Image (tube, rainbow, N blue to C red; front, top):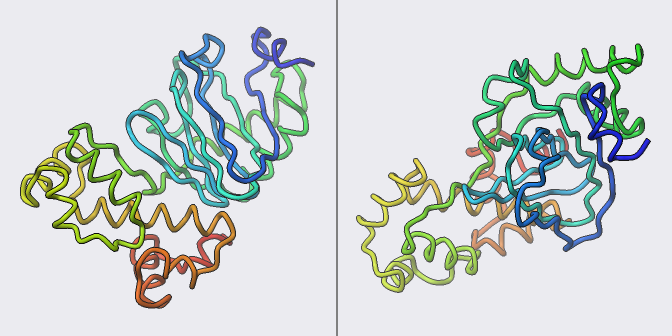
Length: 263
């Protein structure tokens, strides 16, 4: 059964896409959202590796055992860290969704339960779920039960629109070890600390300090996903010791880096 058949057949409620990419590749966005994608939500998931999903609203880092929910009609780009085994689902959008509460609000990183993980792998083996096939209809029921209970994870980095704030984000991203003092970066951006705090609060809902910590955290997740060890990541991001980095990671995500990437 071809993908075109999956798109056109009204009895197909879920499609899948599975492929393994080598390090450094990226899934680039379409210039416009194709009509066939506009009718399907996406659950982006990888059985191996770390992904970064980018839209005009921000970036979401998707570590192992988590997924990215992308509502129908969204334009996005996926960047891959390390070897990434992608196993995606496309879910037919409908007026009465029966999905988790925030499904239509925008992109989110979501927790993937062990049962949902196995469902994703199984559906990728099948290619699609047809509600007219009894066995596949039963899988659809279990899948939608799991999708109703998805919980979101705070792994988004909102993109500020103000040119000065956007420039600061670019400067800090290019200097992950924080070798340049923040005061010097602010001068280059043409804004005081007070002004920048106001901009970030208004446009991202986060203080400047919170935004910078989130940026470093997501950078750390990408590096860990590419295979770097905790000690190396800590030093590359400017921490004096791995214990200081682990303390930050635990404070933000509630677990050590090793534990978080395994569960």
